Image 1 (tube, rainbow, N blue to C red):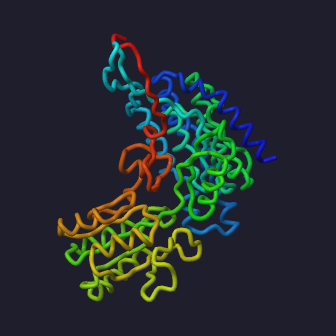
Image 2 (cartoon, rainbow, N blue to C red):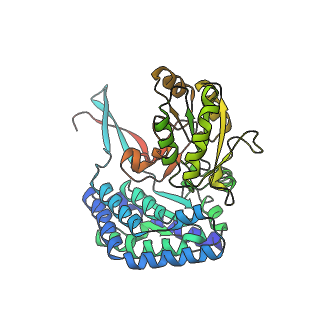
Image 3 (cartoon, rainbow, N blue to C red):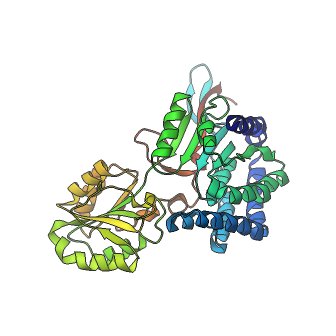
Length: 410
């Protein structure tokens, strides 16, 4: 039955997709502006639906970090609306680019075309409903959204009261954005089984469940943009400005339930013993405890996924910047790593050695975020090690390349 529910959503989105693919830029931006206006106008209903989700999650024993991700505050709702307005105002991708002239009076051009229908699976983060839907609309792709049971009430209110009426007002078929109405976990697996309807699925989540969905998608010929693991790394070099290092440690722990928070803190062994007491004090002020050597867990263990011990950071000495970067490469997800140093040569060595998605010099890994880096919302952060969109995935990444040969005089 769940497969049939998901398939019905996918067929409805595919049938409506041409309405979005052929819409004018003005209509698309009007829809995004309308979403922002309706989000503010419907704030009471959205916040109440979210409060119900939060109450249910608290009763089920959800951890504080996950509850934080589930909660929509008034400030966060305002930020969501502001992001929609920002997205409405940024340029649309160029849809046709001349490449070169060919013999016989012909010209090669490159065209950008929407995928058609893109799926998205995400858990207890209701703001992702708006983030993903807005990116799909800007990129002219219809979407099938599936969220976990904890956030389904919030997502339903956002689609019903914000997204659907704004699309309708802009004369775009509101069926282009579908929310799977089932809280059944099986709906996630069903979403990656219809390659003819939903050829690409964005997988946002963490850990084994997201990887399993990726494997299931591959069996059915569905491509994915997946974000399964996270965990930021920070290396404090012997030449680091220590007040700066402590500030970065603190700012990297402002939210514990997010993927780009500080997870592994590496300190040059030459200064480890001297700076450790102050580091422990900084962690304590942030409400975080250290996991010190000898570790009884994998050194890259992602604490954000541990509901009982998420307020933890692994701390370890390393010999130098090369060992720090190599350890981050081998033992962590490859999401993001940073170095605190005043030595440009050491910074360059670290950044050249680290192969992950984002690398930072005297900056926090919390910056690995679409809005913070690129000034637009993201659909997720991709950490693949193959060509394709990597890092924060935004509307500019959600298109297909098409080569067209046309008369040169056109």
